[in-house]
Amino acid sequence: MECMREKALLVLAFTIILFFPTVWSNIGDNDKVWQERAEEARKEALDAYQDDPIEVMNQFTEHANEDMKNSTSTRRSLKSRRKGDSCLATNPIDRCWRCQKDWAKNRQKLADCVLGFGRKTRGGKGGKYYVVSDSSDEDLLNPKPGTLRHAVIQQGPLWITFARSMVIKLQQELIIQSNKTIDGRGTNVHIAYGAGLTLQFVKNVIIHGLHMHDIQMGTGGIIRDSVDHYGIRTQSDGDAISIFGATNIWIDHLSLSNCHDGLIDAIEGATAITISNCHFTNHNEVMLFGASDSSSKDQVMQITVAFNHFGKGLVQRMPRCRWGFFHVLNNDYRHWLMYAIGGSQHPTIISQGNRFTAPDNAAAKEVTKRDYAPESVWKGWTWRSEGDLLRNGAFFVQSGGPSNHLAMKNLLKAKPGSSVSRLTRFAGALDCYVNQPC
Image (cartoon, rainbow, N blue to C red; front, top):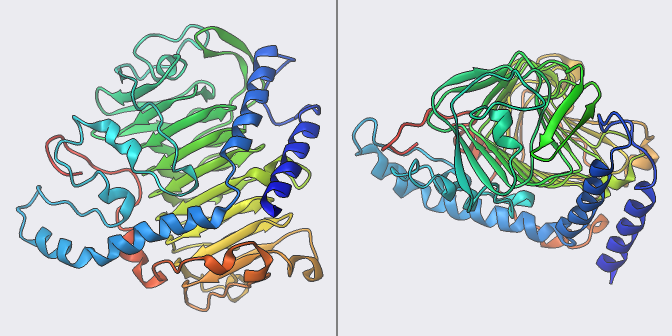
């Protein structure tokens, strides 16, 4: 009954908010097509919302625990394999596909491997393959066939790969349509020195195996966003990946650094997202989940952050959360200058089995940071640390408790923070070769 009441309130909040214009959309005018997309995205977000997030978390934890049980015998067998033919997958997502020599012939197997809140994401599975052969991005209105921009605007499911290694400098934000996979395995693809990727009011997108760095703000202009629509876009923020009101999104094995704004931002009711196996370095505001304390549509936001490596040169927001429910699991936090995990507007944050290594600065030992609320208010927020490994004086200020959220008492224990080095060993874009385990 309580879950039904909660979902009814979310529907009401979404309905009210829909009638108010947003200043974050980058849409230059009252575009009917985008309005229709926004309405459809609202429905998709409510449909993707999990009434019992603990069940989703436990499913992830069960996979990880079972994987660890089998790891000892697997490591022994790997030692006997000849060089160049061994598989060193070290977490349950990777073990789903990386040990297969024929991964390049069965690329779409990857879509079966996602766990967490984005677990229903299938990307372009079942669709045709599109091979990007041209690194240029010269025509925003009529993209050239063979370019990444031409690929992502196509209708229907599409599995996008690359003919060779390349550097793609996007002139303006790359607006990706639903049911797409961008798969960089087997090549060395950098999206850099230009604009970033935009997932706005879409569903079912996988982004895998890319290097993204030095992303800049876009000036906007007339940009085609599908085969049958184009429109005026305002300035883009300079995020590597902007997830705006999108659902069922999986970001996996990316190497991200040094962008103008965020590395990954999820806002405006985006939900059902998993961010896994990524390597983050050299950036200030790493990940923002929820853009405004006044945007209550982010109540539906549910995101899993797992098996990621937060490396050198990071400052804050790993992530910074508002409103929603966030499972932060088995990540390696090696560097931060201000704090690691922050938030406002009563998000639920469950931190399990992470390794937090604090900086030497005595004023920055705290993992957590709460904004815009006195302790008398934030002490009721559910921020829990379970099985985390806290090093070099790091400390996690907990609040709330198991009784503050339905079914918290049923939460399974994740692998402890001492396991993180192995689980995150291959975070970032992988070097994969055809006819060899990746």
